Length: 151
Image (cartoon, rainbow, N blue to C red; front, side, top):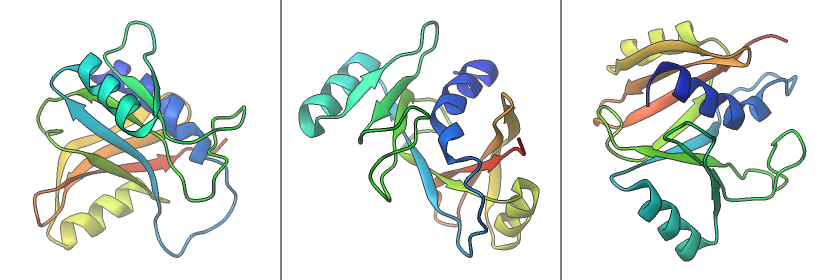
């Protein structure tokens, strides 16, 4: 999955975290992604093992994963709960990824680099909803970054 495909899928999943209207002292986890070698098998596993529901947007190699009920805007109804996605395994996304909401993606990338991390996929815009990037921490874990765009 590249560029527009990923952007469309992320747009659907992360748009619900935008516009919350408050400043956070800590950046919160808002999304997860699970790479899979076999998309159908992975969807069946998570459905059977955890009762999660999945849906695949037409034309995309991406499955939206719902771990909790959502409202009409896609916001989880259970405080602290998040939803995510399953995507084909492809470097640098070889293991599960959490996505962290940040106020300013450029500043967050600067803090990551100053702390010893590195950018593994440069920032890209996701529709009119936000900007995303992937970084690698000092332990080799890939983490997603998400910045909402002003409405």
